[in-house]
Length: 389
Image 1 (cartoon, one colour):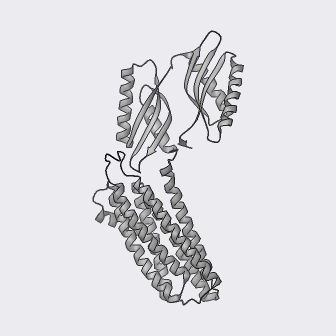
Image 2 (image 1 turned 180 degrees about the vertical axis):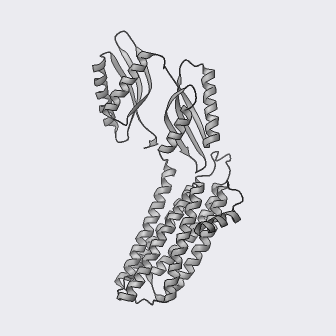
Image 3 (image 1 turned 120 degrees about the vertical axis):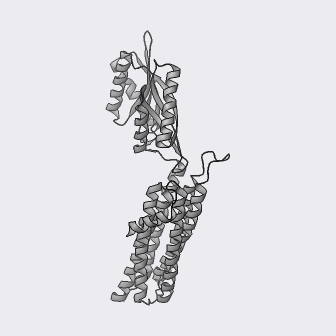
């Protein structure tokens, strides 16, 4: 039934399946209607039975309605096309809107906590009625559907706002359930735990607000490349003739549907500039078409036909792996002199290695390589990966 209702609403209101803003507007309107209905019902019941937990829960629904309004506006703003002032589009409005929603949730949680603390020290009798319990149970059912509804739409369009709204609605399910429990305890055991349950409700609301804020701040700050996306892009680039490997992949998100990336691609040094450029152009065009990512490729020429260089690269890589399994090397070059052989390469270490750790690592690696050949002189650039592994 839940899937049927969701599919029916999509069929009626979503004309263009590729229009993300239409999904955002639909979710916002449905959220406003459902939450206003729940707010009015719970507020009336809370006043009638004099329950702090119920009234706390009702204002939580009011904040959810306000969040839906903001989400609706945010969906429209995020859909605005790129312009002179914002050449990468307005997709990050979606993250900003989600952050505003989290602040509203936190404000409600703080207010609810204060009210509930007062109820603990100054408890009042509760007037319980069957209609109150029925409305609260209906509220739970509505919120379950609303959570699944937002979750489905959020996954379909990859929207952090809708996914956060879905999680918030699921939190409301537990919140209202706690309210029902407090009323039942008072009815059958004559224990007034309304204030205590109100505190639990407030803590759950606060936790939901913190979670939403954390999830939306991360893309605004700049997240590491997800491992799945990292592999997808690198495998795509390496699938073309002439590309020997990739490294230093960086992805910038300007909203869920607009991403830019840069990567270093290792290309055989015996290819002409024209041929290498043609390969790179083809890859960039295909990545934009297939993955919807604007990719810029930096070419790194490498010598793949020199057996001495290849063997030395393997030795260095083996020694690095012996010391740190997750470390890698790239941009390896070998410059031979009369009494000295320069090994020039970049060393990628995990983020757990600080500056001093990296210095000790390279010093130890140089000693190990000199044991292989005293003529080896290392010129190492230490860096960290941009992928979230």
